[in-house]
Length: 218
Image 1 (cartoon, rainbow, N blue to C red):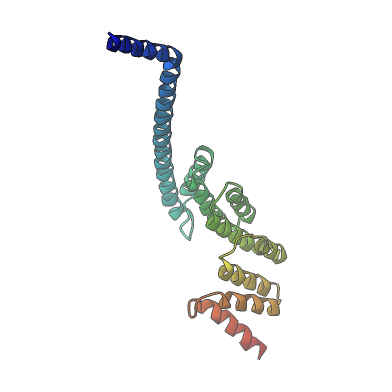
Image 2 (cartoon, rainbow, N blue to C red; image 1 turned 90 degrees about the vertical axis):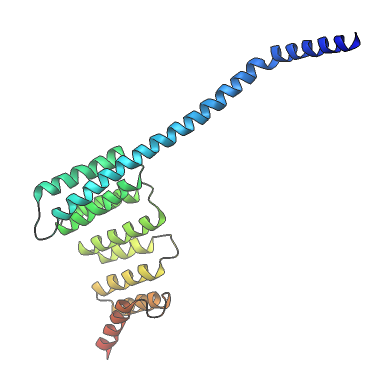
């Protein structure tokens, strides 16, 4: 009899617990399932977005091949421009959009549209590029600014890069920029800094630049 009462008490206690906690338990399970399904759905959506962006980017590359060089194709150039715009507007958060802007900056330089090139590079710099892409876009912008006749501004761009680990490339570019200004002493110092930060024998062109400066001084 005592056992039966105990079972009845246990059943009653279970019913009471369910009345108090059942709804919140079910709600918790529903929320957890929704979160899992939502995460999987987001992952699938991102995968589809990346695949579509990849296809557009490949088409952009194919168009650019015929858009620059001695055999310029205006139709392919227009296609490249359209695809780049589509990548930047519809897939702005992907790396493909940044790569598209970098490519179109190169196309603009080939066509002597330096203002357009700067605009494309600025787009990259303001759309959360990776560290390496930020440095690359900054260096290319500095070169374009120098081609526009403002080597001093170009050097200030290089000096403003807050990223360590690119000493060789940045100092070599600074050397080129100082040389374009006719400041051989600073160009030599920048080249030497770049050479000292590089592995022995890894930068033959840089060594050639230093040797040329030394020959001109003798």
